[in-house]
Image (cartoon, rainbow, N blue to C red; front, side, top):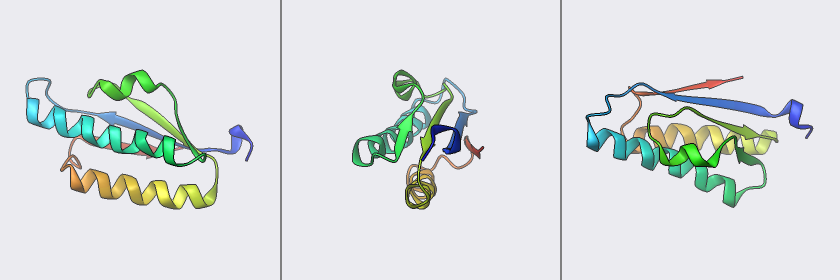
Length: 93
């Protein structure tokens, strides 16, 4: 798929920097998504360095419909598993 045709997911975080447990859960969430980049050629991350910074926004690109379905399910599962639904916003472009 042409990179211009990729599905882009923008992930932003609105959390207090003072809540250590929450920041750890956000990092775990972002790491779950980043791990998918290594499992699948369909998924890439805009800037791998921001994975290690909980409050920093990050974007993921998915370049196939099959990858889109898997990644969408992964986002939902990871948000629930790490209990970050209320502080992690996901927008698809």
